[in-house]
Length: 205
Length: 205
DNA sequence: ATGACTTGTGTCAGTCTGTGACAGGAAGGT
DNA sequence: ACCTTCCTGTCACAGACTGACACAAGTCAT
Figure 1 (cartoon, each protein chain N blue to C red):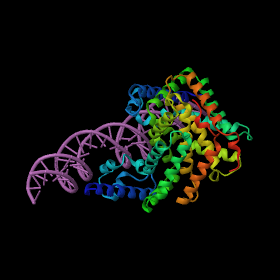
Figure 2: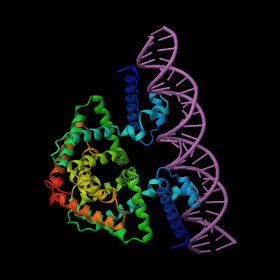
Figure 3: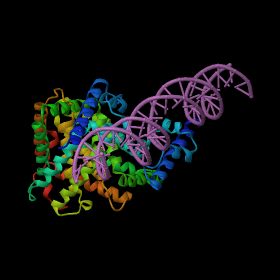
Figure 4: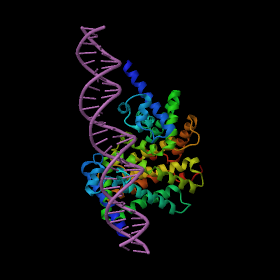
């Protein structure tokens, strides 16, 4: 890896950390791009060359999680019930978080607390994740051997799975720590699987 | 109703119709507030006195639907399983649409087509509806006799219900018409209820 | 190392959304 | 008519973005 790329990664992390600290200190809304750029000592224009906008910074882990979800689903056996595969994806996202460096863990916890204080961000994450959801639905429909546009169940499977994901990750909680989040995540998966009728996700459209 | 209020309602509808037509004609993103204000012959400032922003216009029916959902849930018997009540709410929202005037139906169908062309708007609707979702969760938890912060199931019930709502209303469809939407809505409710294990939403937290 | 080539950065200018403050005018009640 | 209330336009402004351009820093030859 050349000097150029190392420098870029360094700037990227500098922006991320500066933004996170400012968000926590003075709130998400009242933090401006100019302030973030000021701390990192770059021009505001450069900020937008690293992130598409303010919410991109705040929802970085969502993008990452969605990528893992897509990969995991694709790598699961084709004869596994789709919802089961998606729950495996959910576990994979959680595991990835547990395996990350202490620095990344700290960043994630800051973001997590940010979501509690700014519920609008949860909504924005859905907006940002719409494309992922569409692709997941395509993948589920493909596995079910039907066209996504004509199969309500494929949509419902993905909708229920992402719902569970949001309940596990984003609902306010008293103690914000990795073990607590992992516990809630496991409980949510269990609850969701228990609530659904066995075989519901392998029926004909 | 005085002249003042009639005038306001007229302006409100004029803005709505002008915005809708512009959105359909030239796309949501490329339509500016200034253009909308120009057609209605008001100042851009006044636009913001009727609507909080561009997406407020595009998601007007969502607000309305959410209000009906909350009312319906509150009016259902306290011993009815919460998810069942929410599905009744979903039917009530649909029924309200079917009962609306031809003008409102036409507006709704325009908005519905807008959602197909601009998937980002679906996400924004979730962002806008976050507060409603929170209040629904409170209501469900109250009926279950538990505190919302400590009951995952209350969150999951609401999340599943709103998921079903989004699948029924917002998934792209080939034929966009009231009968087609009503049919899909009914099918989604049926599918959701069939997919869940009976009694799942009345268990202890 | 010196050159040419690529790529990241700052500056500048501009658009669009959204908001607060103020003044004038239309509607409502007496 | 009169006073109050509410609505509206104008002005001024902040903040999120974007395109264009010139310059500097990194990269890769010879």
